[in-house]
Length: 344
Image 1: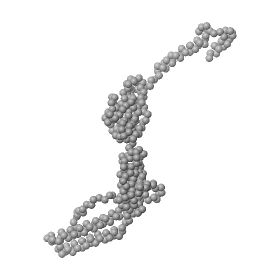
Image 2: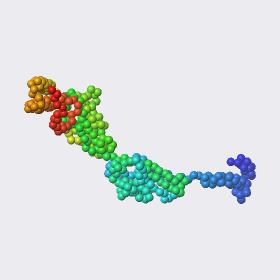
Image 3: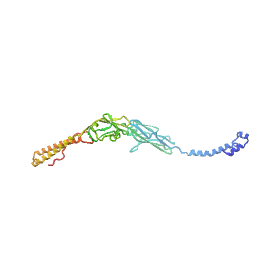
Image 4: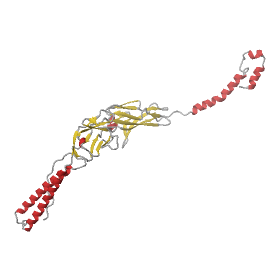
């Protein structure tokens, strides 16, 4: 407030102070206000003319969208323009190559006929794994100061677990290390696995000296040293929280003791057959039995080969009983093929 103006007003006579002024010239305070306003008015107008306008802006309500397979997915895109009321809207999908989803007012490629657009927001119907990926919404406004704006949306399609494939050996020997495997390669996100024995869940081991280990992420059940008590019917369940859990068909695994007597007997039989064939062949060779014109030569060799074949089969069966690794499913037997003749 102007000090001198207040002082002058107060120095007037009481009757003069109470009377209202007749004109603007008689009101010095009003004249002072008008003079101050005339100084600020050009500055306000200049600021209004120089203030920047908002260019085109693009945003989305959700940058990451997760939906189940065969359901609908909404890819939101919200834009504001400066002047252009009819901007160009484009949707693209990133991959090895950038492909158009929506261009020139139409959906393209696999999205044609199963997608709709409202404003700039796209709705995909019955999405599959082929639709998963990163999408980009682009808004072009040629009449704005900033003519291009964009935003990205990532679509993840969730797939419930499928029936896992299980690898369960039919038999093993006591004290051997055995692995049971379970795997589902189609579920998204990846499934976690749990094992069952005789329809009862096998709990995760909590002690360091446990005889088995379960990896719920890889689906491997490993026995460090199986025992007779581990005999039973095993099955595996896969779950990922998207759909119902799936279980593979159970398979019976038998744990057998090692037959030491059979192994020793088989080794002795093989050694005897080799000794008999070797010594007998040497004696016959000295007596001219293996001369080119002798009829019994081929007969003797075939008999020794047959005995060797039987002995090798016996030894192989015995070795299979003592196999300490994973036992694959039985394969069809192939006939023995002789690849080298005896040198006598």
